[in-house]
Length: 53
Image: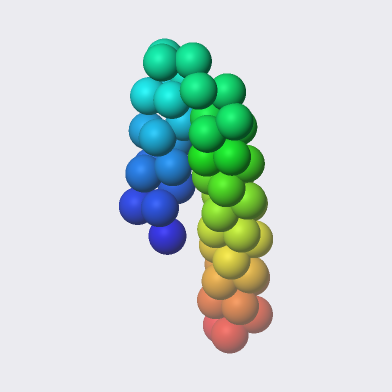
């Protein structure tokens, strides 16, 4: 999942350099959504490990 965040971040940066506003915004939004999903899953994973012990 981190790979997807990096891919969309790179696409957003390249699109921003060339001035493609719509593409950059779309890639940034997708990267942010995937990033927050990853953070939530990480926290849930850590909490489940904490309660197992």
